[in-house]
Amino acid sequence: MPNLILIGAPGSGKTTLGQALATKLNLPFV
Figure (cartoon, rainbow, N blue to C red):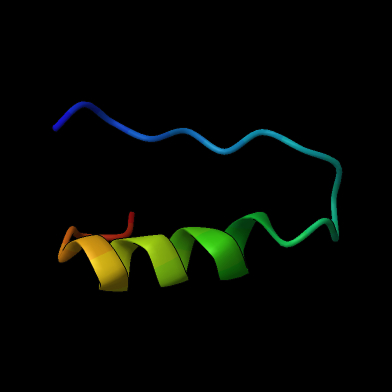
């Protein structure tokens, strides 16, 4: 699977969404 990069303004939930996606897809969150 290719890298997933989330882009957005500070406080928009990038980290929260990234961690949820990583958990759901069984991928590491860096």
